[in-house]
Image (cartoon, rainbow, N blue to C red; front, side):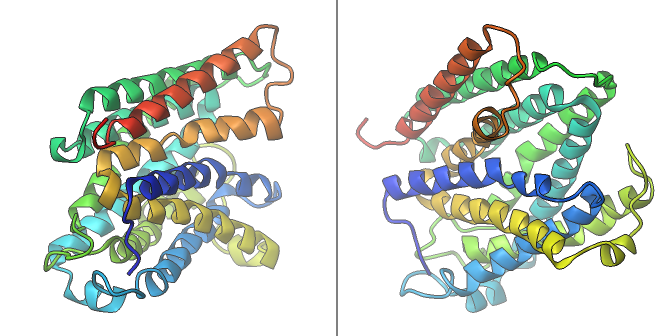
Length: 336
């Protein structure tokens, strides 16, 4: 199996995670208005499973180090399997809630609160002193990324809108989403051996853990997504039959592409964790908020109608973000 041998490569993979996690939602913009989120999300979930399997049978099955995918998942203990499945279900619960919160209260409230909480809780939950050489730099870096997310929220509030959102309800949902999002990674980490080259018996390599995680995500749609198809929090119902009657090959492919993009980031992130440590790997990955902001600023032109002075806030946001990332990277650099 492919194993990251250097910290620089691990950081590079974490940056790929940021790009993927901050970009996959663009595929939803490519879908038509007749294609409801609930239908899109089924294809997204299938895309996550397919990409995880592709990684497992390629990078996870070639090379002389570690255990190949098939022998690895065959020896996995029940506890490891359950932890990875639980991680997929918890993530799915959080991700669906976050989308609902954005629909109710808008990006300005839901996304910064949800992802900001997930970033802080995730770093704390996955922090291990043995894996971080300079913890002060790690926590200062995380704090700066949180400041950037708060500034991002202030910028979104400047966008002229006619939305009369129930911000209280949306805020409450986004808080629950952020707490759940902050803990899902820990469940996956508990299913894996930290030594990928000589993994412990019963624990899994990241490739096997990613496949089981993806199965947990897809299966938990029956619990979390299916009820929303009949009784959505907002908008009209999205009957399951319309997935087949209204779905076109293009729409299905777009949804699967979105899932594949997110799963690429996830797989690279847990692969990088073997060298970067879980806290640093997760913290860098959740910088995806700023990648999403980049799409909003430069591609979708979401801030073109904002009042004067917004440009300075945008500059401050990216400055805090970049400095925070630099500190997070430097926090685990040996000899620093």
